[in-house]
Length: 190
Image (cartoon, rainbow, N blue to C red; front, side, top):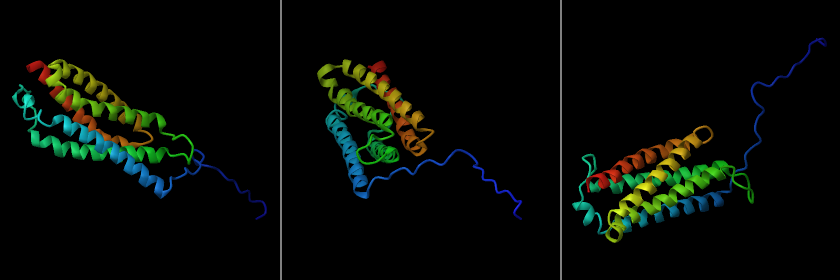
């Protein structure tokens, strides 16, 4: 028995150090902040649409696959909820401790950049048309194409370490790609 040799081996990579978790209070503040930011973006878009969806937009020629106006509100409400949840999960998974830089900082910057572009699109496309005419549609098209690129980049960048975030943002990416065709259709047909 004394001749037995005990060998210890490790299978696979060494275990990662435990990731610090934000306090419950910090998580609540982050969730509220992200939800508030997304609500402000949604409210800005809704204000920009007021009077315009029944005005010039109702009279504009649109592509045959344009959904009815009533569908946009529920679709965007769900998408904005998914966006806020994705942002929260990304922030929480990247949390590295109080006073320390978030490990997902570069992804969070992409998240914020696409959200800023999202906040600009409706005011430029809808409210901009009465002031700028068709130039507003072209500016909006540039905005949404850049937003498409940023959201696609974010979805693919999150695939490995933040799969849930990618899955939550995938419907949003599909919708804005679809919306890009609607924006381009307005330009082509008017």
